[in-house]
Structures are given as C-alpha cells and as structure tokens.
Amino acid sequence: MDLVVGLTVISVAFMLGIAALATGIGFGLLGGKFLEGVARQPEIAPMLQTKMFILAGLLDAVPMIAVGIALFFTFANPFVALVQ
Figure 1 (spheres, rainbow, N blue to C red):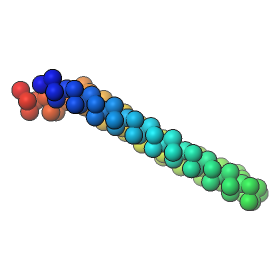
Figure 2 (cartoon, rainbow, N blue to C red):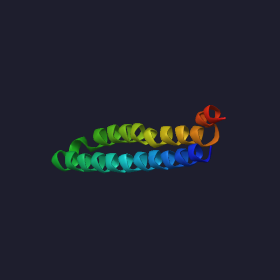
Figure 3 (cartoon, helix red, strand yellow):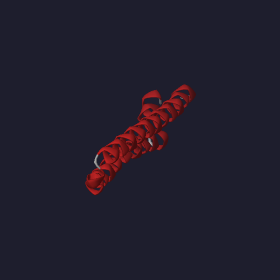
Figure 4 (tube, rainbow, N blue to C red):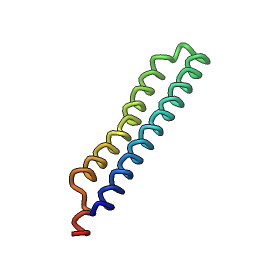
C-alpha cells in the first residue's frame, strides 16, 4: 500500500509540473505572437487583444483540470482500493 501511495504522489507531482510547464510555454508563445501581430498592424491591436485574452482563458484551464485530477488522486485514490 505504501508503494501505491508513494507512486501516486510522484505521479501527481509529475502531472502538475508538466501542466505548469506546458502552460508557461503556451503563454510565452501566445504573448510573442500577439506582440508580432501588433507590431505588424497596430490598428488591429484591440481585436487581437480580445482574442488573446479568450485564448489565455482557455489555456489557463489546462492546469486547473490537472489540479482537479491531482486532488482526486490525492484524496480519493482508486488504486488503494485495489490493493486492500
């Protein structure tokens, strides 16, 4: 049982780390492309900004889903019932 709990903790940490890293990379790419678009055509900056914020909200949902799954595995681990 200790092995299952230990491996669950490692997998939860790995899942949250990968989600945070992927979100950081995504925000970096999104911001860079936004700045490129505004530098090319400054007159469409408000339209690009609106679309960027919509995509940023969707991109921010990825770590929130990972946190929800991590909390599920931390507090209601289905694998512990298989061991007992």
